[in-house]
Length: 510
Image (tube, rainbow, N blue to C red; front, top):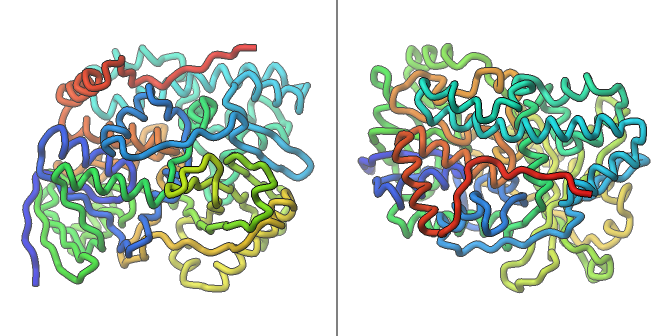
């Protein structure tokens, strides 16, 4: 049996950006929407991007714009646990580095570790501040009419200098000290084997975001997904979980979307507009008519294979309590001189705070390792690959934190939503645009389809803050600039506080 349904707007994907866009359009603009996760999500599992996009974030203080939007789209039913002041502990072979929510402390730690690089530390963080501000323009130009681009860019002109360069390229012009460059771009090292270069402005936004302090959602990624889904449905939205079977294109528009839900019901979905997001195949791959498929494929240019997160749940025994771990994030880096057949990736441990107990200490951790998105399906079809990577995670913990390793009770692989035939693995919230994309490939719609818009499938910005702002930007693209700013006026009246779209600046105070 096939169900024929019509909507104002179809949103595909199951990430924070997609939920943000869908909920605002449904709840505030009163449009009839349907949100499709794009992958089969059995009970107890969540879409893959929620694993990494929601693990922890900066700038979720109650007065921040991202927090106000997130509270609004979840009806304030999601709580955030602030991580300790030293919110990340990096372990390199022979070196350690703590990331503090106090920028001065972090800069002083870098200068102490690398006394010959003191001047470069000051220069780098000056440029990071400017480049992070320039990111606002990158988002705004997708919303504003082209005639206003030049005017709006002037407000963020100080960051334009490095907009088209990669962070790796930028650091290479500053110093030849490999250790220094590795430690400064530590959060990028997870992606080292999967990407060649990451756009400087987006890595800058990443660093400035987390240097304001870090938060973790109580209950972990599953709770984030549940709260987002509940709020979206309560606002009148339709949530479908399953797989996209195909897309029909008529002329320069998407005319119909064929969807199979988890109960086996086929749906033919039609809408005036379509937002294409994360967790699904690229649109051109879902088009079955070969002639149209080739036309769309030719218009997209070279595709990128983004890193894919492999997640393991790490539970502990009674020894864990005695370690006085308050919820900081651990990043364990391997020796840079690894053999070609070894796994060169870092292991990141993210805290999960129990929603049931409400304790201020984590009761488990999620270990995340990244593999190339190109080989994701092949990797997960091999039990040996999953088992080998699990042993690698345990060995890395033993190498850098033997007491923590001794407290491990169990390590189990966490499956995100089942891999469907149209699964597209793009870990939004953990990956950032390459320099080539930042130089001019940030587009509303690479397929030149008049009723299609992109959300998290193109705006690769890390963490919850970037995800929320990418979703909001999508609303601006779909609804237009004037209704977009009207929403912010509404949000301002609701919170009775000044709303700022610009990224919150940091000041260096000794």
